[in-house]
Length: 426
Image (tube, rainbow, N blue to C red; front, side, top):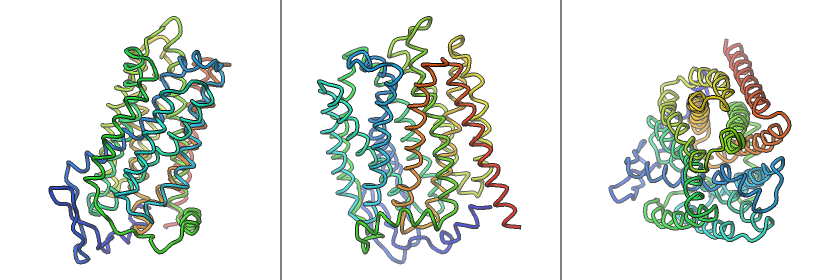
């Protein structure tokens, strides 16, 4: 299996310098200690911080209609609000995330979160669409602190528990993405859409302080590299590591599907005959959380060498999820079933992807994360703009057909690469 063949370095000790955590959140460095363990408190803190940070680029999803009305943006092009955020998120992945292999992450991560506070305030007080889009661009650029935390958690965790820890922290990411819709809907109905970003700014400020206290000072694996060399090495990793290329393409495709659903879902739900409130629309994120939590065990399956099996089953569920989603305008119960299946599938593949690539090059986890997540961001941006455009011309049926087509393409790509791998290994 590709997991066992490409991760032999893990078995040989994988990071003898990993730090063991104390009850106060500090870590002792010991070159003779081959493994370490994160306490549940620190793992949950990582997950919470990831959820809060990544939510910032998804609050706008259930607010597209009110933003379009407020700033005079056509519904057929309002997806640009999400696309700009995702494009800048991709830039942040390339330009900022590799710094985790170069700088002290205890200072870097809280520092970026403080800058996010300023960007969120700009969005919350934006008087024009230009200021709004500028603020959202900065929010997207800085939200990549999420991926620094995921890579850091993988570095701290012991090899035998890395998949579990990555699954737990990544669950925080997916839950943050999904609850962002619920929170945005409730706050918008209570205090207007601007309150969403101002409340988030306050929460990010608190979290920046908590992380500064809890994060350990950690030896930087790529400290000998210059910044330009660090950026070039991201592309070099793609050339060198086949598993990174395959899993990055899978990320692009699954998050295209994810964004096709969640970007356009507000449009049929907010218009007649349903005409749901922002709170009700945001509540559908809770169904996605159920799927994300169910998929958290995917990391443990990857630890046991079952990553390919998990991927295949999850991608099959992803394709099947569009059948009940198709009936969203006629049955909200069917929509909920479809949402649970889709988010379970996306989360399971995403966790498996990260669990596998983190074991390839222990000295370059931040750069591996950057390269992988760039494809995630491209997929999210593509799905956002494509889904709103398709909805304007073909309605919900067109959106579902697009989602099912990309899901089928994803399953086909996995099957072909898995078969090719099996043939090569014979």
